[in-house]
Image (cartoon, rainbow, N blue to C red; front, top):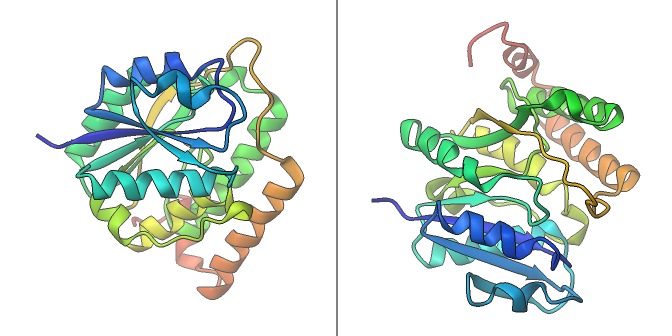
Length: 242
């Protein structure tokens, strides 16, 4: 049987981390929590339930994901499921991602928040759809909810994936991963999952202006380096097969 690890980057998530880890443990072989320089009890609360990697300072989501991915590979994971620590992703849907991966092992499995999407705040939904259009074009494939961090990465993809992961790449990392994965022969497969907005949810770490501009700059660079990829645009719109 393949070994599946859940990877949860966490920064000051003491309010939710225990419940998320406990729920994830029932669906995977092991759980890895990367404590990204938290100032609360995030790491202490789950050190008896998960493998906890402690980052000495807050390095951002990209650095936390990268550290967790490398640890998972080094310790024998065949696939890594990433999910957020704040309760926005339902761990009970992990089996759907794993089943899709077993059917299509050379795909990056994207848990797209499509169930109940009508409850998404309008401004956020508009931003997500704009991101979908540009990232789909740059990666030459139709995409939905490209900003979802609920994903399954096959180990063969992670061994070849080379992405910058310093602090400024925090929310660029996952967008770029879709583009580079497609180029490496691991196009995305979309699996619909629930759209959850917990009550008393903490403010997002996403900085709308700075992080959006960084994603735009990354996508523009990818398109310019590949001659604007006109075939990619047609494929992203489903006008020609990939």
